[in-house]
Length: 192
Image (cartoon, rainbow, N blue to C red; front, top):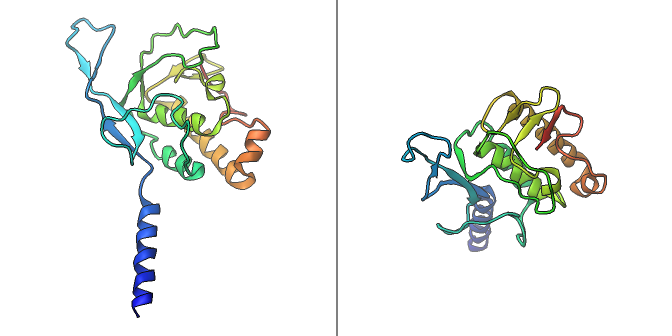
């Protein structure tokens, strides 16, 4: 009886640990001052996606997942749940590929948590994520329109990432990596 009870307690603890989130969104202590605002006192509350297990105040820089052991499939699935989260990310729109001469000359300065989630998926899965997505700006290749907060372009990107995730589930992450199959392949979208 005691042995069965012990096994049930261990099993319940294990299931609870597995069911816990990998990520959480936290508000930042320092909020963003709008660069193009008339009144420099205008601030926007900003947020970051952090690891749920991290202590308050710990901020991971890019590449976010360097030296972390993480269940990639579970992490991707969880990051895809951030679709629709239009809270502003703490980080501004900047390039992250120090070897690129490409500059972003657009007017978009901020991006949303939902775009950050896709940007983090790239870092989690791709060998050279910043070659694929230097800036957290999604672009419709046909119209040239850009999106960083919300809208159809971002919704279509999430659909593409979900399809890519389904493909990974079917063929495996290693095959995706070996064949250089990217999330936005076959779409009219790209990262800037």
